[in-house]
Image (cartoon, rainbow over all chains, first blue to last red; front, side, top):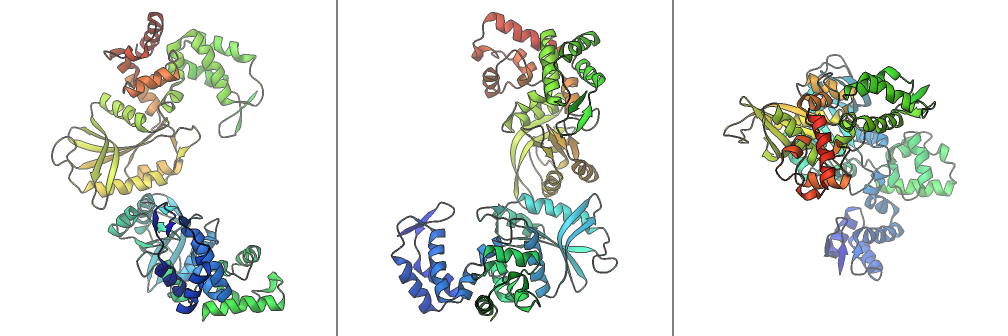
Length: 274
Length: 274
């Protein structure tokens, strides 16, 4: 059987690959095999990869909501949009978990012009600027013009003294983070120019998806037990992550959920954080 | 009486300004005054500046086709689109008239990645890259990201040896040319970074409109005596300028015009070139 990838490419359906991705989200090998058996009858030649993903996701939800949330991570991060605002906060959170001080949305004067920085981070007296490129569609890649203009921004800021966290700070590093992918040209230029790139799966084995799993920094948008409207209410209170929701004093207050629903949500949260 | 500018701004109608722009395209003061008298009755409070321009243009055409073509220059350059290809050739022509050697559409290796340059020019052993930003709409301005990413391209190419016209050439200058305008931020950044900017009216008194008039390098698209289809046929033969049309051996051959129409077209051409 063949499936159609997002790129339009037709490839042989790879059962092992689907099993691996289900296991990566926490399912046991047994559950993964069950899911494959369950969806087998619904597959057909030429089915889109998104549809296969969706079928497996719905089945996984029946087995474990926490695993389904993890499996749905990429969509969850995309649901932080449509504006880039929450994504920037989310990225700042990832830096904080790595021991950085952070500030978001900073206006700053360069040698030539003023700039708005999405995130500024500091650790061990090193200050870095972090530019976030949020895309609301899976198809959009961040192309080479982005690292090219951001390199100029970095160069314009390098020589100037700032005071983000204390006096006389110099920006010495620059990150570009996207929820999607970079084009190969963008990676080539960025790496060659000394920029640090972070995307969904770059650097390999250390991309956004691995960082999220490593630091258990799941966006609340990937929860399967809350509605879109409920997630929006949480985001407006800047409760961005599952950890925040669980540890926030009044996290649930504005949602007005029944006790049994709160229990279900907390259960899913614990599955993700455990 | 008030008019509405493209920006949406409402301003007092300035008769003197309209007279000046008509005179700038070659009309006598007397003709300009006649035109104002002619269109006066058609004006109304809140009329758009484009509509005023259009009314004046139609009247000017009755007085002198050559002057109308000059008055219509900005639209003529825009009609070189929708792709940027002919605009790049047109800009190359302007550099040639200033004594440069030129090449368009050049692929070249930088220190990090390869780039495609719109135009490369050379004079007195100095080689410059020229990036052309063509916009098909009057409202679009070239924003600060453009000089920012082009500066990175320039820096990526600077250190490398090239051979555009002869051996061992280094790119030492960079131009950015647009048929519209730059944002003030783009000008600030570009100038501060040592880039050369050229737009419709920048540098003041030495912009694209002045260069076109100074070198009489009128695009055939601003002629009022040819149809859009006829202009397209000429462009396909790379007859881009009025000068080219008049001096090209078989310029008119493919148009299949009657002798009386050829006479009219040549008449307008002569008015522009004289």
